[in-house]
Image (cartoon, rainbow, N blue to C red; front, side, top):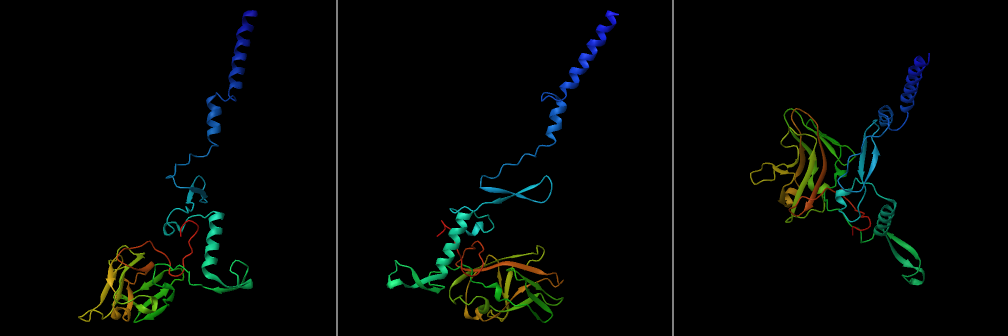
Length: 269
């Protein structure tokens, strides 16, 4: 009887020890179970200051650059801004738009009594083309649409790919004849060779059209400024959505900035 009991007891103890070991951190089953709950490893960023963002998809994350006040403003217009930098930017905007012209006891060191809106120290964007002045219009079966977000849509017709906008000097009144300017823009089309250009009718010596492509520089003339200007769209009537239209002085393509006043945050004077 004693010989029979010993193996039974030993087997019971061995089974109990194995069952209890399933819940200790050294067991394989325990490690497998907790690994399921762990978050995937986040890939290393490029070294720039970034914040994690929620993509709305389980298991996926996004990143967003944080504004660096020592970097270029134009290259960071889509970055997140911390409160201190934002406060400085707002203050710069106020200082640029409101200039004190009258003080208590006529003493500039005392409180301001009267401020003038839009003082002479406003810093303007290098972009000389005001896309907001393009109006929605139809001409000869073609259609020009201002999308209201800084972009336009040009739609041609089967026999005409040129979509008229208006005279160039209406959209860029600060251009001066005799100076050199560079055009840049972006198009939604990749299968249309003339998607990124302005077209001016009857401005060449032969009475033909002048085509000013994105990235090209030209010397401005009064004839170009007063010519009918438009954009190109396929005769298939596929819409050409054109954005980031910019004309800058000089021969170098500059990073895009919207037309108008520019308010630069702290550290980018």
